[in-house]
Length: 559
View 1 (tube, rainbow, N blue to C red):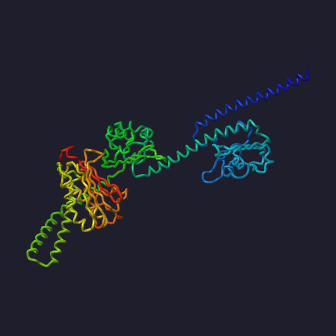
View 2: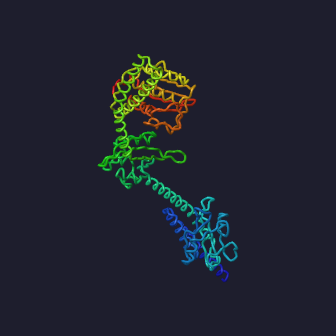
View 3: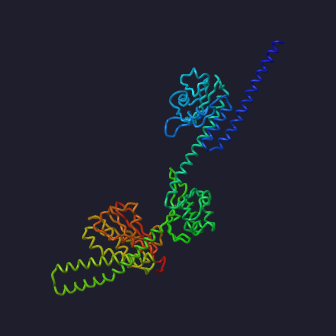
């Protein structure tokens, strides 16, 4: 009976311990599941470490504890949250750096494993936070092989942390690592977003950013001011749906109408990068304002397009200044033209008189120089007037079917003597099947003359200028004409700017200075013919100015 009673008591004790361990394990699993939900819902680093330490403290016999994380600017750890310490001790711990290469903390980080100390007085590496501490548990919070932080639990009793408690805290640290990494990534994202917003808000241009799903990601304060639409009405919403709302006037503010913008956005999302072109327009409202809209792709580090940025720039002052300058230029030009014509007529008369009287050769040479200079000045004034008329649509471009070959031959013949003087080879290379083009021969003749003359300025002695024309392979409705030289070439960043009025590149060495009007006239004249003009690198070096003209059979309209 005594043996049976002993066995029964032993079984009862074993059952009680097993039941207690099972109950404790169930409670730990429930706690892990609960803390997992909390951590998954938390994106703040402070909240994550607080939840983890609270659960570690409540599920073990720890009297006090702390969680320390890496400092972003130094190779040390510092407690982010503490529990169970007196206020003075807690304040001291919060400003104390934990070395990562010494002590128990250093061992745990280097080994990447938990350390359970049953008696801290027997561990020479342990530095007590309180004199009453007798046992401790240090568990690294790891993401793979990278240690993110340390859970440090302490107890006033020896051997306070049994194996189930150690296993639980290790599992808790595993959950904490993922939540902590998510929180840190979120914090970094928020910081980057705030920094980007601060930069955008300080920009003078209105900026609207939207992603590849058409969702507006960000709008800056300047855009709110220019368009009169708040960020709350924009951010997080579909751009296409907002431009369809007449109450917002967003489509007009972005250069609408809404149907055109919707089609352009569809093309943009469909892979056409230039679907939203650069345009200038007036904003609605009582205040007189003009803006310029541009759109550029936003790419990630791999070069993939992840969205687009629309910039709206206020050009009212710039436009007003340009108009004032144009008015002043037009007034001066008109006032100079008549007296110059009179001076030129008088010089021609003097030249005829001196020729009849057989006067001194020096006088004849002086008159010839005066006539050439006056004609150049008169040509410059006429160019200014022509450019002004082309810009305002007042110039009459009389389109008629004409031979481009004849126009090119006339320009080459006119400038070939100048090319021979500077030892430059001027050639023509025209396709045998060159069709008639729809042009104003006088204007296109000036375009070709200007381009050849421009090439002569920058081509060194012994160089080559080739004028070519052929049907456009990219569009059979057009003819492609080009003037290629062997000069220094034009840097890519200046290839759009050189077509602006009065623009001349300072770092280009020319045989003679120009007025800065020739290329501007060429652009306006070609565009008035329905074509376009641009500049590329010439094969083998130099520049190639290319423009297109409509074939005569394509359109017979005059404008």
